[in-house]
Image 1 (cartoon, rainbow, N blue to C red):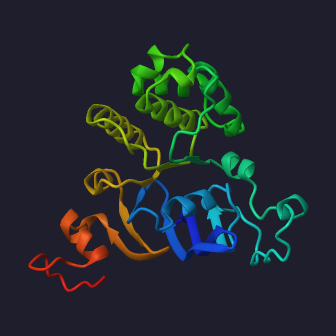
Image 2: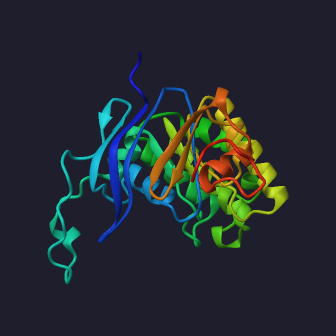
Image 3: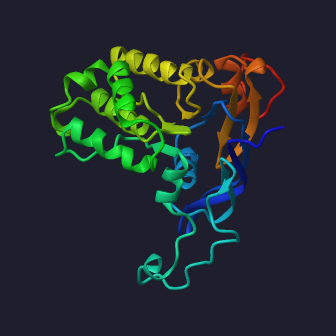
Length: 270
């Protein structure tokens, strides 16, 4: 059996002093896609931020494309709270190394520089690719996927709608030539029309062979894209479901929250 593209073992993390998630283990085969689904506020975004090195893991291991991304061992506790401990301590993960390995994270909230134009924003992203891919071909792909991005290429980010900014954010991720593209709630807060456009574009990205790690609150949308679904509950993975065994939306709700009175009875508790 080939080495998984992404392998996570016993990962724990959070924002000191509060632990947000713990004991996360999963393996993502090459050319596959996985989804995370669960209630808001249960640690999914913090887990993704840890995978991409935006925050340091407390303990556990992250391997990507055969490369270890974090330092071994458990993170030491912060004994002194009145100064910036990170300024005198080597970080356990390097986000630049993560991006250059090909693990590209498009975080929730399209965090773009408002005074840059769309064209300028997209032109910066290939630096993260470290020579992977072809910047012109990637830009052509972005413009084909998102005609609105092409139309607005000379506009500053701050003049774009929320949906257009999200399109640019995903375009930035593609410009970095991802071996794995992490999308955190890409359709959150969009109008039905823009949501439909964005879902169709993400489907085309997957069809083009880009593996996805996707978080979204629309189970049907997730199921159309992924091979494996992980239910995320109270900072832990509570269940792994393969595509061939994918239950309905109502059954997934019952798995997470318990069946309502008179509702589904599948024998699965909270």
